[in-house]
Length: 285
Image 1: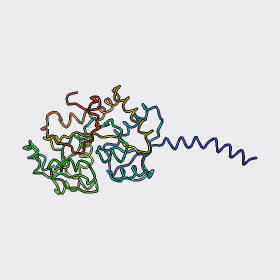
Image 2 (image 1 turned 90 degrees about the vertical axis):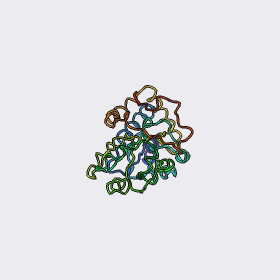
Image 3 (image 1 turned 120 degrees about the vertical axis):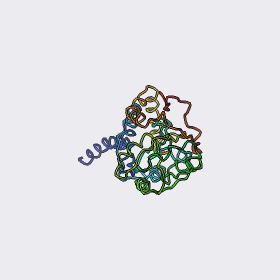
Image 4 (image 1 turned 180 degrees about the vertical axis):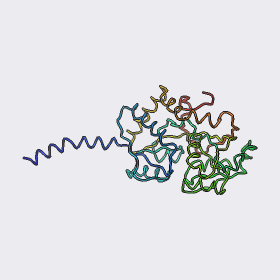
């Protein structure tokens, strides 16, 4: 009799635990000593969850991962992560389900350079792509930016270790490390010991988007988060959250008065939602 009662009790509570486990959302810890994107991205993710109408509990991954491992892990469904965020490309949109609401409002493709402190004036006389081609950039080997920069005729040195890029720059292994305007200030601040500086003259810009991606086996999760992000974009919550983090940075970097070098993006997927004006940052808004 006791066994039957225990079995009935177990049958009653198991669905509860199954639902709770199914609503856990594991996100990746990146390789950076201090990930400058994480606080903002998690706030966007919480906003998307709240507006989706589905309750997901956020949990960090047990190990730090480089971007290529995150994508491979999520694509293979190994269960170590349920979601990631990265710049889009056709390859990534084929391997994973993109949630096509750019959480960065397009600013992942707006780049300024970290340079050595003693070379802060490096780009004072650079005004064209041909001028910039005389300098070497540093990038991770698995970032789409590497292909974009090289596709525009720029020289790029690569590594498979994110933190190594700052040390390589400090040692003069390349001339500049182009970083998005939403991450460069935090990255500079967390690497001051290396005597780096934010180059004040140039803005490198190419069209792209920074999305959440989930497994192709989780269309339910993709639909829920897309629903939440679309709602937040329409009613202005996403834009307000963006400015809470980025307004001071835009002003400090003097984005509106920099010389702009436009690059083409050979990796831009055709489904990029440029027809949704509310998704993108515009100078002067």
